[in-house]
Image (cartoon, rainbow, N blue to C red):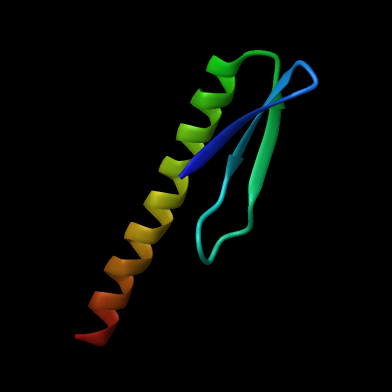
Length: 60
């Protein structure tokens, strides 16, 4: 799950998932931080889904 924090007038989006490196980025608006964080979470979900599919196919 993403975290959005206010830091000295900037908004920082932080995405943490088990098995992946933490990603973060600063933005001028909270909305942009949310959008970026959601996009990064979706990218991680795609990688997890593909990895799962490959794992199922290769173990069959």
